[in-house]
Length: 229
Image (cartoon, rainbow, N blue to C red):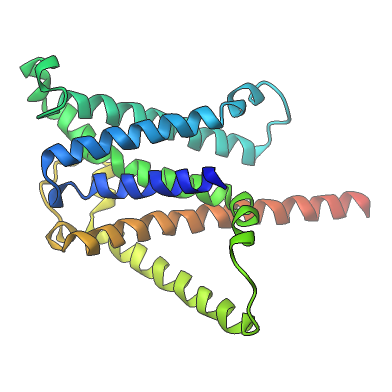
């Protein structure tokens, strides 16, 4: 259960760091460093995943999951490295001025977090079944379970709609294409509203990852039924 709270903390830190326009630069760097530490701890706690890569069957879903994880780790390293290069406080005296003013480094640092947001969402979606099993003990079924079920479905639908809206407001597509963007309609919003849009984009891709996982499981089930028949 402690891992779930760590993962939630990592997500909260990441959303806060992405809300850079609403934070003092020093706080942005401190939260970014805390996020990096949390991510390293997360990788350490899941270190068996690396050794397990050498065993087991490699089907399409496993290839996708590994690809998402490796891309996410690569983005994490690049965002951390470029963040250190652009530091105005914590690492300023360690970095040459040429790196601090490098346009490409700046572009990578402001664009890759949106790729990370998408990859983190897909990563969660692909592992949602495991999360669900660990979260269920925290909730108690109520007598009005049907109302709660429909309420949760409406909330999911609302977050998906807001996620699509947030993608356009943040110009996520242009970010991924590394276009030079100084501001978007989303950055004009208050900090909490901007964070909600970012979370909704994350949730949108978590639903996508969960949907892909569900379709794969149904496909495998049909294949098994066909082989038995």
